[in-house]
Image (cartoon, rainbow, N blue to C red; front, side, top):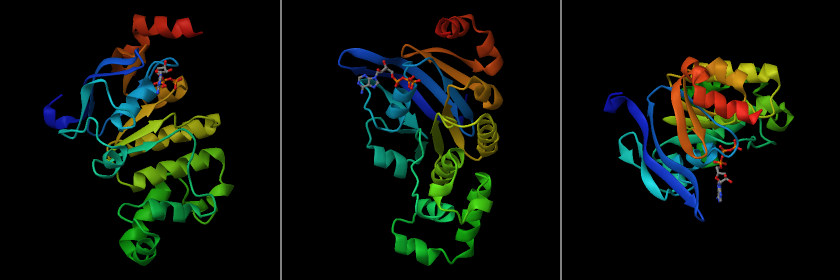
Length: 249
Ligand SMILES: Nc1ncnc2c1ncn2[C@@H]1O[C@H](COP(=O)(O)OP(=O)(O)OP(=O)(O)O)[C@@H](O)[C@H]1O
């Protein structure tokens, strides 16, 4: 991978919690426009890895380089706002009493006060951007619904839309299909595939059908170490990965 193609790089990233090594020497490179899936058994360190990238946890060793800048140890708000790494956590976090459309509007980049939002709402570019996002998350027809009246899956999509609205360079999705029906899970996969290219995306997932649906390149973590990386085909044939997953059953 050429240096200018790399959006995110971790170098020997390690973290210890009271003597317990949750991550050890993770060296990973994510290309601009890529859709990377991170898998691994429970406790493998997937969430911890995302916490290190987004500044929630400080590494014991190693560094995080984002878009050519060393962001290691920077504050969460700075990483989100200035460096533009957006993260959608498990479980939606939307404003229930506001409409779907209003939720997207307040999430749009640069609208720090509601007043600014109301004034700017009038511009055509703003309306177009809101509609574009509503279409991406397939909630255009639900735009006037209160967010609290959406289904679990739709609420997750709304939250994805709120992350997209912040125009992040990197979108991190933590188990985006958790609690979804099979149909919603499939739809989420198609949505994420469409976002790829325009955005660089890292998805952490457990649902292997979903992983097969979306994944091009997969990173496998196990016991805090990077066990394997490769295309979905390579990963499925990797004996070490098979051993880890068989052990789980
Ligand atoms: N703040 C913390 N203090 C102590 N131990 C922690 C802390 N955060 C994570 N760990 C430990 O680090 C290990 C990795 O946890 P992590 O949540 O990153 O795994 P995961 O791969 O995301 O698992 P899951 O798939 O279950 O969400 C676990 O053994 C966990 O108990």
